[in-house]
Length: 332
Image (cartoon, rainbow, N blue to C red; front, side, top):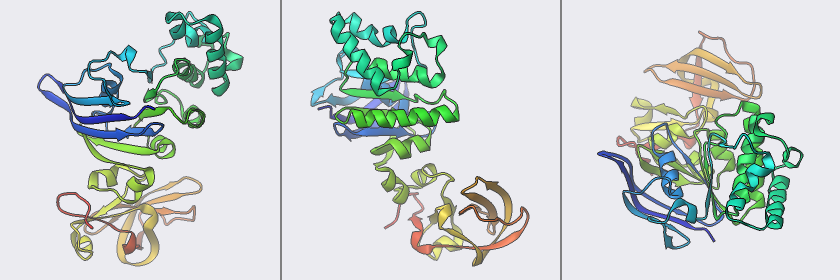
């Protein structure tokens, strides 16, 4: 078991408070992803869990054991970084075996662990190569394999795919999803700024904002029931449309949020001017400006779009409107 409980955690750097009263319960075997804008504290929180950063106040427990003063090497945690941090003079096999050699594990045990990790990550053809002979995606898989052989209770991933190009990012994301399926009892915590990674990999997502937990829930909960304007803006691509003024007031809200797919083009009581169009094959995004000025996005299912500069009429599904008060919090 590898439950993680964070209670009233604070982290200060001098007079600057980076993490503010963080409370989390992460169940054993969960895949939890931390997301948020740059500087929100997601990597700092990950490093506090790992033991690479000290905790100013609060309690961190793993399997019911308080870890505040336990060194990183004794927490049963393996961390995979954005930079692969591989030893260039060692082969893939040697890189993956290194931590077990330091523990003086028997050779047969090391060989078995490395072989199993290589099988899971499809690295068997590359075991005798050196990092310089591998692609970025292969190097990241080696870094993950090096973590697997330690048989950790918890995996921590700090933006592991951010150095990869788009195609490699997709391929490696699938490898991580497959790894999670192969290790159902292992808890995984993953930091990313990429919404696709968060929405497709996570059992639950933690949205951080200025050092606080804004909301925690499943991808579906965050997308369909954002509890604040911040989460509404942050989750979803393109962003949720936010409308105030008389339109929101008519629905009993200070601000309403409408997903681009819940907007309709053509007939409707609202009028706006097309400012930009993005054609993406299956989807077309039409950006319009209405009066009073809101920059809105309409998502079309690959159908022909109006021309830039054209004035169009549009509507939205009021039943799908997310309502927020003047304080930015969700209304019933």
